[in-house]
Length: 268
Image 1 (cartoon, rainbow, N blue to C red):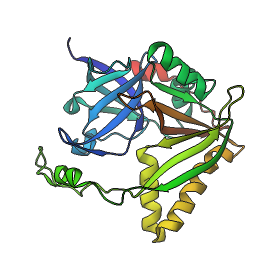
Image 2: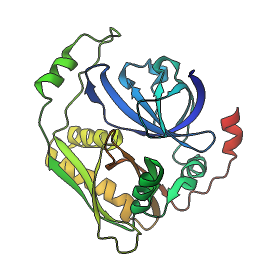
Image 3: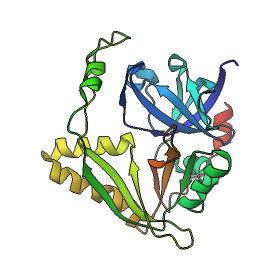
């Protein structure tokens, strides 16, 4: 099996975790130029060259190889040094391009995504919750385990120096109801790097964790409770278990209607 070049709109980056083999890794997901979900792992994101460190909703070209040790159809290995950023889609003027890729993959409910996994191992999905009750913030371990610290303290395999990965001492999850008949509600963990970074930014700006958590809730619950917005959860399973977690949030103002032809862009 050979490496193949794909063009991918990246829509998810999870918060980095220590890795014995790769020092630290990030799980990413995106949508190919042919409109299919793809998971790229392991991505050693903070070790990439600066010009390769893509943002969410960046269009990239990258060499990938089907991961034969992972039975999820979307899972591919990524050749880290092959990443080339083509363009990052602006949250205002390029919103139609984002929607054109994501919304065709939208499912009716969280249960529909879970059932799809049972049928054919499809392990990535997008849906719009019916109601979001809360962003639950629970205490987590305050520091990495001794084994994780040992990994993070090792000399970088790429001889790059940068700030050691911070352990965020909280777990985050959304309590919501979806559109499935008889849905009794769900409580699902979120690992989106963007949410973790928002917490860190709020803590730095306001100077304490209590206020940071309040502002984080205000921000994310505002996405789903604002009648002028449409907001969705992006979910995926954690290998090798079938349990789904939230790995991203897609949100936009309903009156964002800028029109361009994104399919000309992806073929360029």
